[in-house]
Length: 543
Image 1: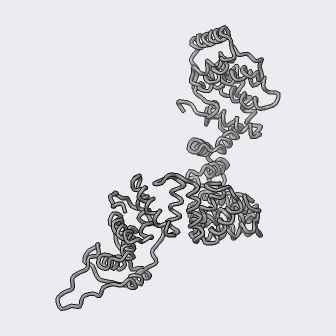
Image 2: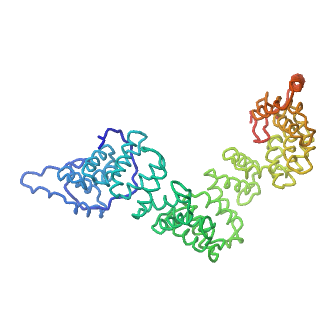
């Protein structure tokens, strides 16, 4: 047994002791030191393990701690040492004391107590100390070899991660299997995952389903939820939405918030059984009140649409729940709230605030739905005076690609002005449309001459492939070289590739054309802030 020499942090332990007790020997301090009896009084009787277990059941953890301290110090049994170490580690009946807990657990391990070995290993693993992890592996190996299911489980996890032991997926699977066959539910769940992924064993959906069902039936909440999803979607199993609904309910009743959300939506939609708006709202509300952002968004949708879901329509309730989700930076919640604010539904109409909220959603989360909504607003002319036109280009491109006619018309109009990002953006849209390649290349050329780096790269790419223009390696090299000189690494890579297809004379000609463009650029009137826009992201250096 390796001596305990590690400085150990606090570890939160998930399982509990099966003990309890009424008052035991009194103590004069938090450490549980027995008070010496006054002269002429009868000494307090020595506590028994039965007394301690009774105190545990009564929730009297001070008595439990005091009694176990006495038994561990005087009787010295492995059971008392283990249980005392455990209450110290868990902070039952007094402050947590991980160092002292480890010391008592080591004493119990020396007497071959497997439970103590597992708990001490978990304490070691709560550190980032490699030596401690190796010691934990040794403790678990000994207990696992003696048939301890929990030790086998943790050892399986170690062999899967390679922490404290040499990574070995086959050994990981074998230890998880041994533990699962002893009924350890966490191992049953992990075994299902191993079969599903083919980790340490041949991938086997039937065995994955068998062990997942076993774990779910034994109350493993994640197994219940995942089994519900698999049955609902027919993923790796025969689709059975009736059975899925029952498993969603089990997980929901165990407090799994996403399961509550999914259960609520299935009751509202009548999936797996008859539609039940009251039950659907009950479960959605339970998850939403507990802070599950997806449930908050879904509740907002339900109240915003009302009759479609069999509930009373309420814009005010929709705004309430969208606001809750938005406060958690849920992008869907932020976009939905912005839509309500822009329309003045359930709250005062405030288009500038709505646009600001959409921009924050895009900036903070990158959610495409925010860009799409902004693009639609641009197409409707609602961003005029609120956002610089060049900033709105990438949003309008996205909306146009999603079929928003107004956004495409806005791009067309902006491309006729001196808005070079709009020319590039419209080109990006048109290059994907059959028969529009030549027009796209013309737009890239116009924007490239104005100094738009993305347009220069796309024009060079077009000349490389002959898309919308005649294939021309000299022109391709020129524009790729110009774009690369202004920071486009992708353009530089393509330029080097094109160079391998060119003669030295062609390369010299292309380089001369690039220098000529830079000379002309230097003599032009400085560009506006539009030159700082990246059409692909909508960002500019001074935005």
